[in-house]
Image (cartoon, rainbow, N blue to C red; front, side, top):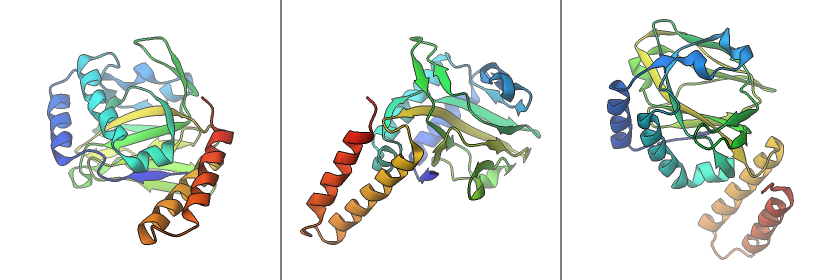
Amino acid sequence: MLSTIPNLLTPEEVTHLRTRLTAAEWVDGKVTAGYQAQSVKRNTQIPENSPVSRELGDIILGALARAPLFMSAALPLRVFPPMFNSYAGGQTFGAHVDTAIRQFVSTGQRIRTDLSATLFLTDPADYDGGELDIHDTYGVHSVKLPAGSLVLYPASSLHSVRPVTRGARVSSFFWLQSMIRDDAQRSILFELDNAIQRLAADNPSHPSSLPLTGVYHNLLRQWSEM
């Protein structure tokens, strides 16, 4: 399931992040690439243990916590600390699949990467190229969102970033482990939750609301991994 979370960050938060990132130290993006991805990855990023990365990552984590759509789509158990990358001057990231297990630098804790997330920090008009192409059973989805918006997709998906031929594409990227490992089950719960929310908004006293809510939580109880 591919989900977009519009306006995760406020314009003021986007401006603050971009200002802090402009003055930060950038390194070759290959430092966090797996064996298969190293040969196709050409970008720069902020070091994972950088104080700036931790500071700005906390802002993003706070934004995720206040975003009901993200919580419903992801059902997060653990979120890997957000990282930051930039593409410019023809830089690109060829087709690859994300590493299945990631380790926190700070604690050594491991996380299973069920979902990948890209948070766009540059307005689409400010650069050419840089689309995130995500492959699934229905074809290729090309994603290029406004600054402050996020796309969430299965980490098992084959995906790539097209070359940036003008300007620079700055983003945050991270992974998360969901309470629901299976993408199909997660999609069912997301659709059911959305239906319940719409029903509650359109007809708050409808008698179906309570049993549908019970079905949702019973499925969550049955499928969740804690």
